[in-house]
Image 1 (cartoon, rainbow, N blue to C red):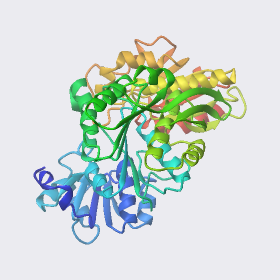
Image 2: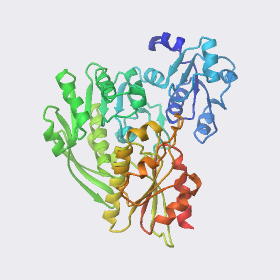
Image 3: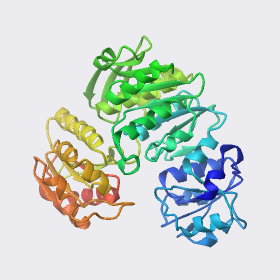
Image 4: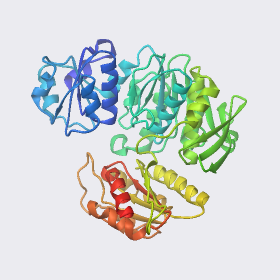
Amino acid sequence: MTNQAAVTPENIDLSRVHLIGIGGAGMSGVARILLARGKTVTGSDAKDSRTLLPLRAVGAKIAVGHARENLELAGELPTVVVTSFAAIPQDNPELVRAREENIPVIRRSDLLGELMEGQKQVLIAGTHGKTSTTSMTVVAMQAAAMDPSFAIGGQLNKAGTNAHHGTGEVFVAEADESDASLLRYKPTIAVVTNVEPDHLDFFKTPEAYFQVFDDFASRIAPGGTLVVCLNDPHAADLGERAVRMGIKTVGYGTVDAVEAHPEVPAMATILDTEVVAEGTRATIELEGKQLSVILQIPGDHMVLNGAAALVAGSLVGGDVDKLVEGLSDFSGVRRRFEYHGTVEAGNFAGAAVFDDYAHHPTEVQAVLTAARERVQAAGKGRVIVAFQPHLYSRTIEFATEFAAALSLADAAVLLEIYGAREQPVEGVSSRIITDKMTIPVVYEPNFSAVPERIAEVAGAHDIVLTMGAGSVTMLAPEILAELQD
C-alpha cells in the first residue's frame, strides 16, 4: 500500500471514484452521496444484488466480479480507488492494477471524512447500537426539518435508503471502530453508546480497544461535544476522563446511572419506561423539560439509543418537540428486530418471525430481553432463536458469554459458525457454545434444515428470531413459510 500513505485529505481527487465492494452497506451509501454530488462513480462487487439496482439507475457503472479492466468502466481510469482493507484481499486484481497505475487507494472512512468536510459532523460510535442510534438521529432530524446528509450501515425502513445528500448543514454517520478508522474523523458531536472489548483479532488486547475511543474523543473539533451513555461503565469512564481532560462532555442514561456519575453533566435522564401495545413508552427529561416518547422498537437499549438521538439533535439546533415526533415515528432499520410476518392459522397461529443483526453477547442479551418483555406483555408465547455465530475468533473469545445470553431464550437452534473473512479453526464449531447452554438447544450445521428444526421446537404465539451477522438473515422468510405451511 505504498500509494495509500501518500494520500492526505488535502489531495484526494473525487472527480472519478471507483469503489471495490460497492454493494456493501457502507460502500453503497458513500456511492449514493457521490452520485448526488455529480461525481463519476464506478465499482465492482462479487455478486449482483438489489443494492446495485438503484445505484445503476442514478448513473453508477458497476461490474459483477473483480477484474483489472473494471477500472476503465467510465472510459478512463479513476482518480481514486476506495476499498475496505479488512474485506478486500491485497491481491484483488483491481487493487493490483491501481498500484501499478499509481492511483491513490483509500479506505471508505477516508472518503467519508472528505464528504463530511465543511459540515457539522455528528458521529455515532460504540461497540453496539451504532446503526440504530444513527438511524434514530437521522429520522428525528428529518422530522425537525433539518434535512441532514447521512451514511448509515443499514437501510432505514421508512426512507428505504442507507444514505442521502441533504440540503442541511449537518452530516450524520456511523464511526466504525473495528479497524480504528473512526480516527479519520473530526466530529462536532461524538456519541459513544457503549465500549466493550470486541474486534480483538485487530486490537489484540482490551486495553488497545478502549484506547481507540479515548483517541476518538480527543479528535472532537473545537467547540464540539462528547456524548456518552452513563449506563455503560466503560462509556461513563470515558466521559469522566474526557471531563478531566477539558473536553466538553455530556451524558445520558437512567436515573440511577446519572446519579452514579455526577462528574459527567447529564443532558438527558430516562425517568420511566413502560412496555405498551405500540412499543415502549419512555419519559425523558432533556435539559429540564419532560418529554414523552413512544418507541416502536422494543427494548431498554433502544430507549437509551433514542435518548442519545435526542441529545445529538438538540446539540446541533434541532427543535426538541419535532425531534420527539420523529423518534416516535421511527419504524426501525433492516435487520434490527425487523418484523417478517405472523402465522395466521394452524398449529403455529400467532407466532411472529423477526430478524436481527446481533452478533456480540451483549447485543444478543439485549435483543432476547426485549423479546422476553414483549411475550410477557402479551401474556402468552415463548422466545425461540436461530443463532449463527459470526467469526471464529469472536466465538472462541466469547463462547461462555454467548451461551449465557442465548439461554435467555426458551429454546434455540444454533447454526455453524459463519467465518466471513476468517478461515476455519480446527476443532472449533458452534458446539463450544451449545455445550454451555442451559436451555433446550439443537446444533444444526445443515443451513437448509434450520426451518424444519425451528418448527420442531416452536409453538403458537411464539416470537421466533433469526440472529447473527452472516447468512442467517436469509432464513427468516423460509422459517415463516415453514410455520405457515
